[in-house]
Image 1 (cartoon, rainbow, N blue to C red):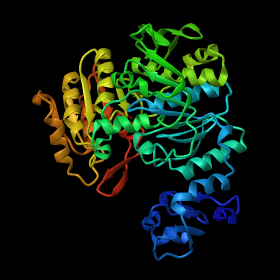
Image 2 (cartoon, rainbow, N blue to C red):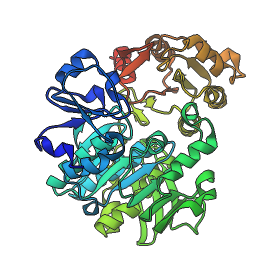
Image 3 (cartoon, rainbow, N blue to C red):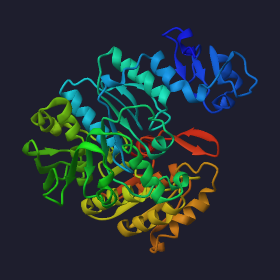
Image 4 (cartoon, rainbow, N blue to C red):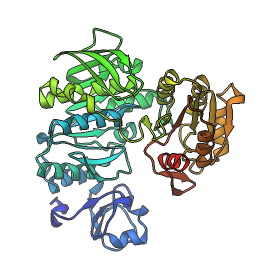
Length: 464
């Protein structure tokens, strides 16, 4: 069958997400996606492409036989994608994907290496933001659109965050998995996957059908090290601070009060001593996991370490606010929360205070665990709301509190703004406050409403 997309002008935008639809775009309805279009959205579209098996009453509809099963091949041809041109990197893991991407992107920029990226914080070309993503791992048409832009700009290196849900939903279908990073694996998204085993399987599915050129893994992560046999790669690089047998071994020499960490790293390309203001040891894993890909692209390890001193943490990841003893972090899984609490517990001079909640209509089992972790490290715990969606916030808070033995340290304040304000009012000069769970997010999801809300802005109101 002739490619139906070739009937359209090459400058027409094709989208599959109704939220991304703009005037005169072509909307590609996959697996019934058109049913989510409002009448206003349908009127924006220049054409609405439907599989011939679909029946829906909308204007501007063009029906195409076998659209759902054949569209990828047609889209590749429409965007003129030559997959062999690219050497793309895919970063997966429960925590650290965004930080790893950010560190690598900053180092690329400092070395004048052309690159693009797509993940939780958006889509960027040469460090310039071009789109606010709805999804950590975007859908195939979105990715092809980005690749087409990159090809025209002679960009061969695109860094993708690969979420377990994105992999499971085959959003990376048809792409060459040339390079991959596994940051760590712990409990997350069990509301979607149903079990930890299925979640782990989704992670390793990323490279199950591919012979990647390089794979870098956190060798100190128990789940990853147990599944190393699943790494199908020409070269697999292990990163460790515990085993000198690892390909990249690092040792912390000194932690500084301002967040700098001095370290020594032994790599296949030499030994290096440097310092970086990235606050915590777990960020050193994220940093060194990006080294094999950098070395593949640039072939000069010294250029990597030369730029480390100027690195900054990505937005919403262990960020200090203007009031130096208040930190904001995206930690919303038990492992992430424990990592940041453990770090701040060592840093505190008096009390560690936390404000956090747990997402509604998401993995219920992690709530108890997050309560236990807060109880272990924090002297005062403000349990509040964090995107409750259509679930009762008080019920979510109750599940968190079940994990807290020290009931005298609990304060339930379901209004997140009030919880942050109250915690700041209580904060002593020698205390540290952690506001966890939302990080970079600028919306609070209550019911079906997306309300403007930013932890950063709330802190500014209280400390101005």
